[in-house]
Length: 467
Image 1: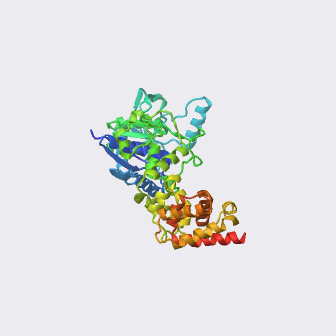
Image 2: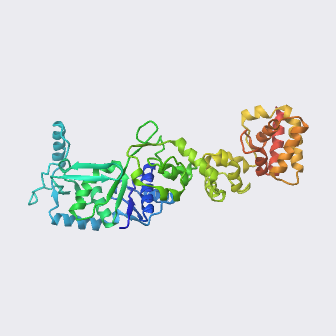
Image 3: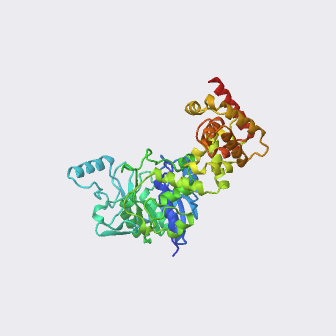
C-alpha cells in the first residue's frame, strides 16, 4: 500500500502557522514512508473563498518547499462528482430530502436546549415516502446509523469512541444543491486514495460523521491523526498578537523557511533533546506517534534563536537573495556598495532576522549618514578631532584597501595618541555609520569603501567643529 497524505486548506484567509504545521506533518509522514503528499483546495465556500487566498496558500507552500506530489485539486471543479455520489446515496436509501423549515429547526433547537439536551436534528423527514406540499427547497441529509459506536483509533489521541445516538443526520447538500464540507471531504479522500488524514484536532468531532459516510459508500476508512492546537504564551488560542499571521508575513519579517520549519516540527514533536534538524533529518526521524496529544505553546524567542542559527550557518550566496528582498522592502538601493554576501558574513553574528540585517546595513549603501544624537554627543567630542583628522588622512592615502590594512592604521593612530583602541574605534564607527553599533570597525570601514569612509569622517570632523 502506498501511503498518501493530504493538506486541504480552505482559501478563506491566509495560510497561518497552525495550517503550516499540519501541512509539514503530513508532508513529512508521506516522505518518511516513501509515499505521496496531495494538496487540495477546499473552496466550496464560495462567499468567503478568494483567489487571493488561494494564491497566498500556494505561495506559502512554495516558499517553505512543501511541494505536493499531486495537486492542487479544487473542490469547485468536482461538483459533478459530488452530485453523482449524492444521487447514489439517495437511490440506495442512505440519504433523504429534508423539508423542515428554518423556523421548525430553530424551535426544535430551543426546546432541546430548554430540556438541557444536546441540539440535534430529530429525523422528522427521515421516513417520508412522498414530498410534502411545500414551497421549501429541501436539503439532503445523510441517514446516520441510529445504533452502534464509531471507534476512532487516532494515531495521536489514542482510541476515541463516539456513540451514533449522539450524532444526527448530517446535511450533505444545501437547498441550492451545493455539497457541504463533511461530505466533500469524504468523497475527496476516497477518490484520492488518502490513507492517512493528519489534521487539527478541531476536526475530531467531524471524524465519526465522515467515517459513517465512508462506510455507507463501501470505501476504505483512512487512518486519522489529530494534531492539538497551538496556544500563545499566555495559554490562550493563538491569535495575531501571538504570531498567527500569514506565513508570508514571516518572510517579510526576515525569517528563513528552514528556521520556520525547524521550529514548527518541534512544536508538539520531539526526538530526544535535539533542537536543530535539517530537512533530511526531519524526514528520517519524524514519527507521527511521537507527536504530543497536548497543546503546544508558541514561543517567538525560540523561533528567533533558530532563525539566527540558520543565518549564521547559512550559505551567504543563498542568503543574498533573501537579503536583497529585504532591502527592496526597505527601499534601499544596493546597486552601489559592497556585495551582499560580504554584508551577510559581516552581520550574521548579530542579526536575528534578515530584516534586522537589512536595516542595520543601510549605511553601507548611502552616500551620507544620519548621526544618532546620543552617539554623536558621546563620541564626537573636540578632544578626538586631532586623532580623527590624522586617521582620515592616513585612510585617504591607504594604497591597499582591505580590513587588515585598515586595522593597522587605526592601531597606529591609537598608539601615536596614546589612546585605547576603543577610544578611536568608537568615534570612527560613529563617523562612518552614524551610530555606535556595527561589525568590527576594520571590516565596517572596508565594506563602506575608501571614498565614502573618508568623506564621512570629514563630515564628522565638521560636526565636531560646529560643536
